[in-house]
Image (cartoon, rainbow, N blue to C red; front, side, top):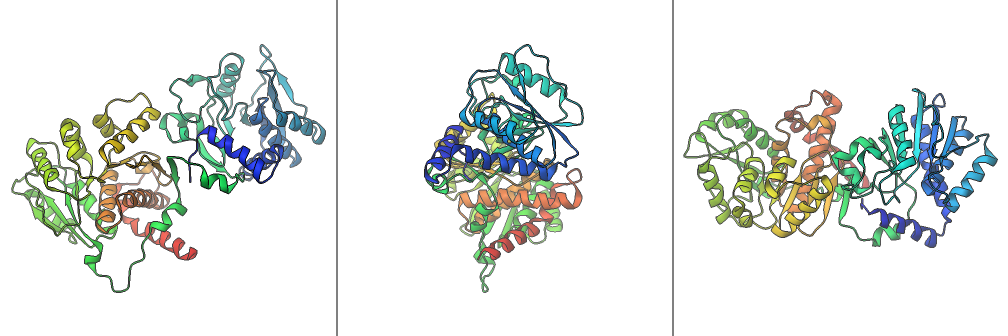
Length: 509
């Protein structure tokens, strides 16, 4: 799914109105009607609703929702925020429809008016200021936001929480933004929804389809995408009847040090479970028995040092190399990594301590083979590129880093992003908070390494690996709960994740 800017979404509305053709008021009816359907599906008529609207098109959406709720016997009050004398044409039309077709008498609120009481058991719908907002809320509008945030227990934002910008909120007044429990956004998620600091405003968000013209969606250009199942299914490869293990690659995983062999075990198991034909794990000599016992399917390459990696073997037998989980940052290991970068020409997977070594030895970044995949968490990425003030700035730094160094970066988080050297960025849709547990990143490294070894391109391996990782975590959480989920559980359900995608793919053939 494409992620458009607020301006592009506005252009999509205009294109749809002109080319479908459909009137602006009809498009609003369609959008708000679908939002109302979602609300009625999730809330019974036993709930009381208080809808706060502005006088623009977001307010018009709120009036349509109010009318549909009232027509379906929901108790609904409407409050119109008169922070401006301007009214959009569609707002005016729906204001008249609401008055004529229902018994609702909207209450007009002006500056210095007494604020309406918001009971604990009522649901507030925020339709005051939508995605068209261009400056922070102040004065009367900000006062209304504070009143709602302070008193409402359950807030549903329509399209955007009032006060939040669609992209960059670095100059916004953060306390003057609605804090919704649920956001119903129209047609496309907004870029700001993917940033962790904005979760307190959006809550959970759901994309409500409104029928934007498909031609516009196809031709409009963007660098940002939201990866869903339909985007991943074409990547899944069907195995041939006479395939053998050498058809699926031979990966070398450089992992482990004294006290950190668990990382090597998790990454190895994940790599094997994701379908690699052969796996060799290069480990310090003390870890030989550990790997042979816990991962019998893997071959071992024994380092000359007992507790750390000191030299990494390279032969033409390996399809690709992964390095980082649990290796530590000793000078000996740093030198071994340096030698590897000097001699390796294949795209590789770089994680954890290998990224930390790069952060402390910036001259090594330029030695990374083109199209390699780095998999940092946010703090590791900060060490790599420098401090950022917010997630929007971090995204710009992320894109600059990938383009400059011709690498892929998988930045782990709630919406793990895959940044590509062509300037595109993909936000992942699978995964859950239970995956915020030690070893989860090691599992992801093993999965991406496996796919890269099997012949998937760096982009395909990153997108598919991240999606599968999150899907396996979602399936695991359904069984063991988010609270009880550990990294080994993710590995246990990689097969179930593959099965789900394979069945979906077969259903579409």
